Length: 169
Image 1 (cartoon, rainbow, N blue to C red):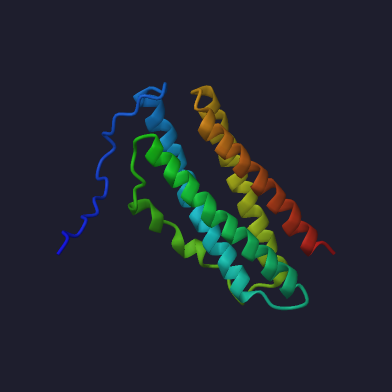
Image 2: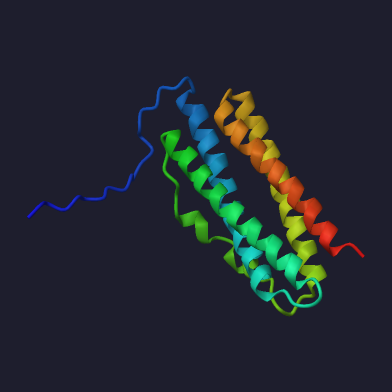
C-alpha cells in the first residue's frame, strides 16, 4: 500500500524569497495584506447576512447584488492570502475572528435601505484602506500587490455606487 502524503502547513515566515523586494518591504506588505484580508472577510460575512435577511420590494436586486459581491470578496480573499504566501509569509488565522460580532450584527431588524447604507459605508471604509495599501505597495515597488489592490479599489468603488443606486429614492 502506498504511503499517504503528509500535508505540511507553513508555520513561519522564514521563507527565502528573492524577487527584488527587501525582507522588510515584504513583511510590511504582508502585514498590510493580512489586515485587508481580515477586513474583506468581515465584509463578505456582512454581505451574506444582508443577502439572507433582506426583505421588501428591493429583495431581488439586493439579493442578487450581494451574492455577486460575496462571491467576488471570497475570490479576493484567496488572491490576497496567496499573495501573502508568495511574499514568503503565512496568513495568520488568529486575526480572522476579531470583530465578527460586528460583522454579523446586520439582520432582519434593519430595513433594506439601512442594510444597503451600512454595506455602502463598509465598502467606502475598505476602499480607503485599500487605497493606502496600494500606495504603500507602489512606494515599495511591489507592483504585483499594487495591481491587485488597484483592482480591489475599483471593485469597492463600484460596489458603493451600485448599492446606493439600488437604494436611491
